[in-house]
Image 1 (tube, rainbow, N blue to C red):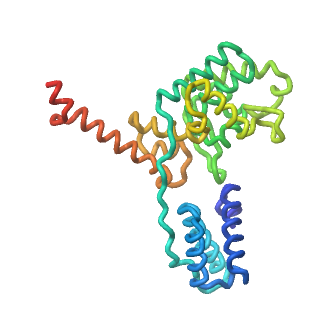
Image 2 (cartoon, rainbow, N blue to C red; image 1 turned 180 degrees about the vertical axis):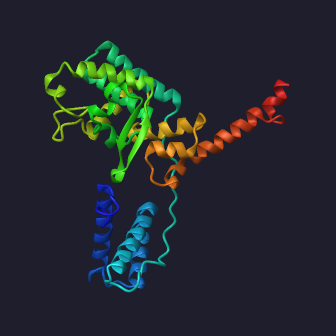
Image 3 (cartoon, one colour; image 1 turned 135 degrees about the vertical axis):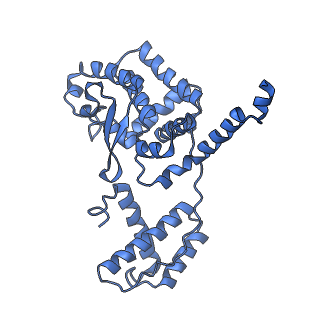
Length: 294
């Protein structure tokens, strides 16, 4: 049902499968006939075992949906998970790079390409510029097709989680980097025939997320940034954070990131609060800055 009717992503399906397997392992007598008390004991046992808040909350959600499904199918008359209290879930602020750090990272990539303008280095510049310009998930980036960026178009059609499509604008710097990369790619017959934008010899035919992760770590060292602070997801966070800090609204950022629910995007609200405080400090007639200038 999750796959066919809701179009849930593969990672979501795997997570739900693990959650139900964990419940089954705990109950030992099968999960379909479980009582509300059985489920409370399961949640308490998980908490005692030190399971994280996000995982515990997802498992409660999994149980609610599973037993609601059994209800809808006529397999149960009740939903024993309906009133199970979900563990508190505190979402940490996303790790992010400053604009200056992203600039250093981009300059390090461009320096590589300037020193040795080969396919590998031009690909790195194109991937990095595209990632920071669009906020794509790494899985969306590595599976881009050449057709997606044909003719230097200003909008990319992205198919994200659950097969949902969205249009994402892409700036001039990223388009220029992609153009330079594609010109060199066309000179490599093996890769030129591929429909993938970032082809490789990997099993699936495109650069793997693991390899891209490794390349980013190497580049971080060159940019004098601790490698442990760098990942494709950190750059996605940087995209969103820097947009909001420079005046973008939360709803627009939600659409560009491909978040189905605005609540997911609200992890960035601290940026909006900081921006409001800065505006008050800079523009309010009674602020310290305005007082000094007057």
